[in-house]
Length: 253
Image 1 (cartoon, rainbow, N blue to C red):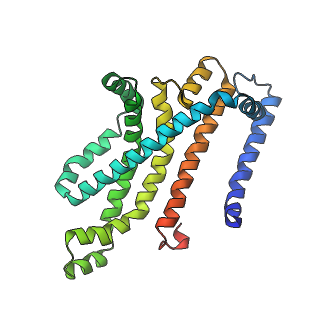
Image 2 (cartoon, rainbow, N blue to C red):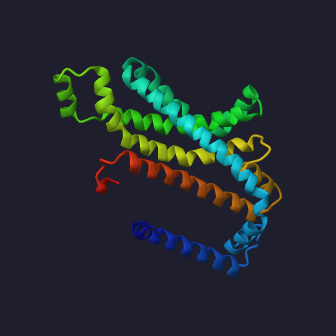
Image 3 (cartoon, one colour):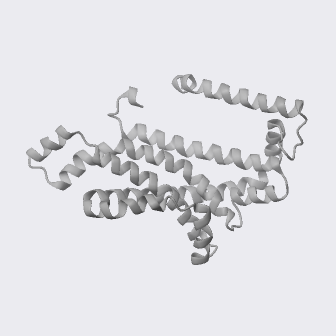
């Protein structure tokens, strides 16, 4: 707890100073609340209207976590297949890069046309934004093994599976968790974007309705919720990493 406070008090102080500056500037400049509400107005609105968006939080979190789990699993499986079959890696790696150059906001309407307005197209959007960082990070981890260890295992007569299971896979854990951290932050954003396409509830729906009604304070509430849950999922990945990679030296964390 002391370590957490020691590491966290500086960004917490910066955040408090930022909100103070924001509060003072909106009052001094007399900026209309519909244009840029003060933090005190936003927090007051959040405390008073939380029954409105609590169901939306549950819907968005369910979508984001499901998409993150599926996207990460698919990303890791793709990385393992491409690493173990080099000819497939040469053929599909450029396509993986190209897949990330298609804007999700353009691809999303097509998914709705193909799969309707149900849960599936929203889930596909989150999978698309989550699998890529996991795949690329894992591929780098599989490839960048220490040469002397690889040479030693080959000299010892290790099979291809033994080299992968005992050397390449453990070596990829650290990059894999880096990819998972990126995917965790993308998952909430992907869930909100997918809800813009059409959903009955969710933070994306709450944000769209608030924006249409010029309720800027509620739009900021939605933004703060997205940031909070992105950081929460990121922290969960960090905690899992610390428990899985116990051999990682303290200074590298």
